Image 1 (tube, one colour):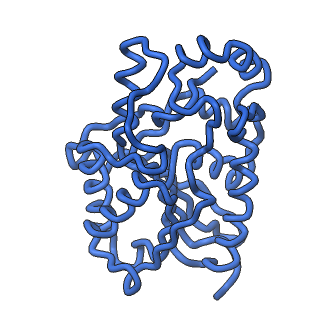
Image 2: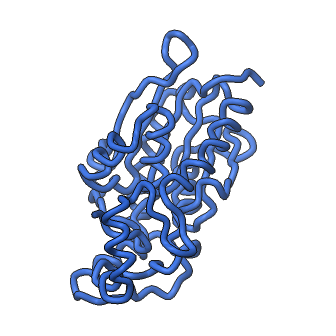
Amino acid sequence: MKEGWPQTLWIARHGQSAGNVARDAAEAAGLALIDIEFRDIDTPLSDLGIEQSIALGRWFRDLPAPERPQVVLCSPYVRARETARLILEQAGLREGTDVRLRVDERLREKEFGVLDRLTRHGIVQKFPELDAQRHHVGKFYFRPPGGESWCDVILRLRSLTEMMTREHGGERVLVVAHQVIVNCMRYLVENLDEQQILAIDKLGDVPNCSITSYRLASDGHQLAPDRVNFIAPLVEAGAPVTVAPDAQAAPKP
């Protein structure tokens, strides 16, 4: 297989999850803990997340056949796997025949350690010193006990992009993962620095089932940005657009 960047790279955030809904409810009620029964890895899509995933799948279905994904790289988390399954189902792409599906743990959600399931109120109440440290250090470098910093996520994604260029050069690749993964992939592909990616992050959350995409530049060596947080497939299908952070995500500074 030819080495190099994919011909087309789409990076999608999963559809709205039950965790997104639970987090919104906990924050609105001023609770310290997000009330959700699942492990983060097992959190499923909400009914709206299913609708969003179907809408995105139908958008891929309507692309000309030579422009549809050939490879899907997916987070092992249930909400991402359900999103990928619905996209392929609605796009009419058969796993193993039309598209190769690879579940890769390097695309998993950022791990939050002791801050897992806490709202912003809970973090301040239970770990005031960590909250102060996080604001001082900044989210790019801050690593909660037992968790990851953005740099840790970027480190695992570096090996993923190396695999991508080694095994999927010149192909059309769809990545289905999480909000932090979308931003950290942008950091790598667009060669950004800390200030640039945090400025992008500060603009707002990545919409559920939005697409950020790149196409191989004319020089054949670099990926050129094509779309950023593209939500037209949802809008055209009448599926509500949601931009809530994941249930386990620590709040923005």
